[in-house]
Image 1 (cartoon, rainbow, N blue to C red):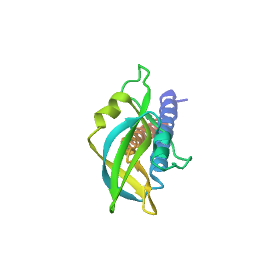
Image 2 (image 1 turned 90 degrees about the vertical axis):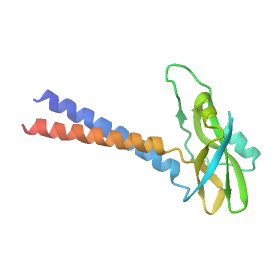
Image 3 (image 1 turned 180 degrees about the horizontal axis):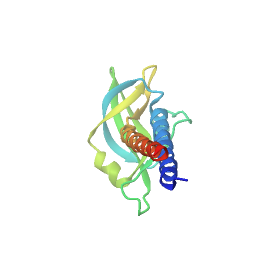
Length: 157
């Protein structure tokens, strides 16, 4: 039995699976929005759903909340970015469902952000946050594929 090939096969398959999970998260986060516009991050809030409800918008419950931290060793209270964007003549203000560490969210205030929205309901929007996940799943697919190629080579030697 070739132990190196077995390890490469198991590890490569696991890395590909994790990459697939990141790919699914990216698709799930962006699947209900077909348009993009440039908006601006204007504030932060501790509760995105409560903020959006105050604005008269209730987000679909199937939306995923993801937490992005800048430091994995310390506990953070997560916050959500509040952003504005304009479609036609109507300006909307929403809180994104992606939760960030306070420092990361505060650094984004005043900066432009890509907003995706549903053309049938422009008030249904989200910040384009899947770009980091896109990079992660592409790297994981490449590493997992390389490991599986190595495993195939080791099995066939």
